[in-house]
Image 1 (cartoon, helix red, strand yellow):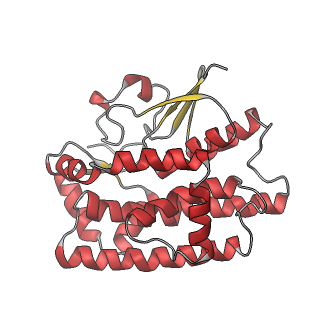
Image 2 (spheres, rainbow, N blue to C red):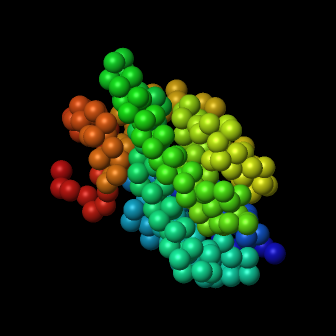
Length: 270
């Protein structure tokens, strides 16, 4: 069967990884590409095919014929509705609500912690004592989230119960990103064993391999792009909150002064 779907994504994006895992778990053929200029905030140099009908210009974005869908949760819902043969979404309303709550925590609070570590260590927004303090904050907060996730997992093999499901797809990329920053769950913990178990599945294994390849040269290139003013990172909602509560308000001020940070659409007048 030919691939009718195009996924604009980036191999490092946890949001995009969710969608790729889901597509592969459901056996849906698709093409995927990383758009030129994605994440830079520079519309003039952004791939016009990616920006078309996509005012947020964020990955992941799914294109299905004339339909363009942004936001990873909405994309997952669309895939479940259009391709119901191999569902990831629980049938039970209570289980479905729990899966959605787990996803929401990962998409907001957990993502912000990992993103913050990227700003500090990948983009070199903080150095010295400030970097150390912010890293300590991130590790403590990641531990809290992982403890909560462990409670949600309980004694089950999967967050979805007896088989991998919606919540598993949504949690794994964020635990993986934490692991890359040295904030991994204990190997002998329920969450640590779940992480490794999921990584053995072909859908997750392929995403992990794509992630490892993409991050091999990520840090040096990322820091250079910020230093040269070639990138304006999006400091939206939970990310901005994390920077401020974790001691990075000076990072925000400097980013505004140097025009290396931006906020979400709609844009403020300059």
